[in-house]
Length: 345
Image (cartoon, rainbow, N blue to C red; front, side):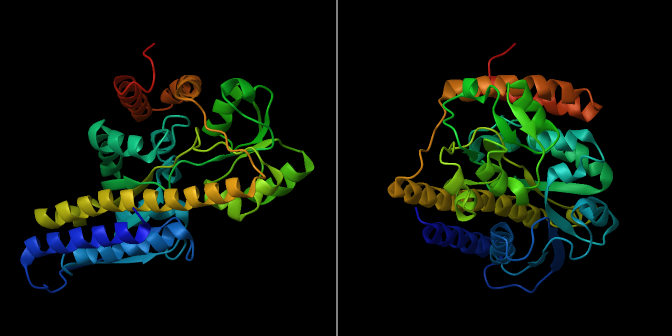
């Protein structure tokens, strides 16, 4: 299904639901400002602006949302406090930015190695206890969790062939500090901390052999495959949870039908966003393969499970950071074992 077709299906659904909410167009009843953690012009921010339009259509104009790019009102790490105080009504943000409040936010935001596809994370949120955990953590701060989305699973950039976990031994790679570095180190790699601006040059000069960076299409657009011709796709390590939350008092004041419409809009948007990015990635993969200059590596389910088991040792260490961190660890590992994505200890 093409992006345009998906968009048409989404809008058709929105129109149908809007009809059930009241037939003819109704007057605007609620106006909210949400700040994103993405900058204006960024692909994800442009998609988030579409979500605001979808909400208007889905509620037949009763809810209007203004999407603001990062730093418009407050810094990216300050939106939780701003939403709680009513300075903002809601936010679209990487949950890890709240890890200063509770380390549990960092663990649930990106449990490195946990997911092999967006659908797995979405199912965990909806059916594995994730949304209940998010509200248990957010509501004491005055926020309500509406739902989650993600740009998708990041690809992995490499100058050398990586067929599985064993090939990570001694690999010099760029990875951000914290959980990502810890997991790769536990897998036998030699991670270093470098800013994104230095990834291309470091790969080109041989300072590093591989890098945790971004999605396949973004990596390709930035020329990383020109110097690192063995990408791993789909990726196996990193997929951020982007939460959509709003001020709890304002949420509680909404009628039930509008609450339901907002929850459904986020679920549908999550599919739309992840599929849009996936389509761009697939197009970039096919273009790269057609050029014949790179080799795309896809890890087996067994190696993905092996990496996930290694990552678990680091999640377990992170679980001791707070009471909520332990709850995240217990809920996450229970889900992964029940879904056959990881073996029980």
